[in-house]
Image (cartoon, each protein chain N blue to C red):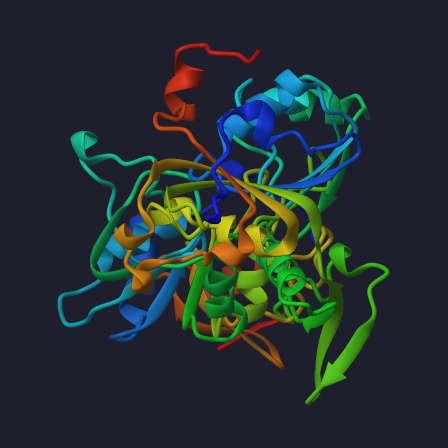
Length: 218
Length: 237
């Protein structure tokens, strides 16, 4: 697998389009944990035919959107330590209960970013191997949530595949990812490799294979 | 004579804290972080501390200040890379402070287990990752788990919203976080609390931490707000 010149890359779905695809796949009444960053966009694309309850691992179930400037309470924050709100029907709990929701398999979907995902569903997203090691709740989430969805660019900024035969970075979890939403495709992790569920309309399966370091099939 | 866990000042509440102690520090980021108790420890000059917390401090306030004063030899936490962290990164990069990284949920459960008399537990969190190194593995129903041990401490430093003289506590929103389980896991829990009420004024249905888990209280009516303090350039001492 050689590096691809980033200038020659086909432009894929933008992050809002990816977020809306994920939002469409979350069933009514799901309990969902959205990772910090890009996955937070998903909540903006939930259709009115369903209600989703958001969990923030610092002890908040029923998380709402960012408050107005005059309603900010620094005791009401999300896992990214940003001010948020609580919706009617929401609740607070302590950290052990909050992670029992995760470890005990009560969280239906966890959506998070990735540095590398292997063909067997291994995920690396917490450490580049450099700097101060800091894991937060990522390892708990991928080990405990019923379904782990990854939202990511298909390639790194340097044009290297993020979908790989084997991860080279320190793992967050082994065999934990169920589905990948990239700018090029939606793919499931299966025994036979990355199964394409939906392909970006501008690219071919051959192109997708050329930018993926692992078997792809439809 | 009545039970009364309320101490008159910082000197009294911190009188038993000793050099080399292991201290759990409540809070998730700044929410629920016992800044005044930590500043009291700076004034006292207690050193060689092991700190168990979720984070490693922001700016030079609270935990960030205590670390900056080189009173901490080791931090056990899940996320030591705070956006406004300055003192921990500086000492860590010089190799002058130890770090043990623990996944957040495992950290919470190790603390809860210690407070509940459970010496260890098996979890799937961390299996197959660098953080499983050296840990016993066991298979239950065909799935692999690792053994994690309970995590206890000499002291817990906690911030609560309301208390009575028995040490019954309530918290404010997500400032609850690690505080209740740390009260359970430490030999001695020291609590700074915004409001002290009469015992009859806290509805027993609303008590989050029952007084049995709390040894000492101090009333801090207007605690420092970390975000504002850092914006204003505050440093402690």
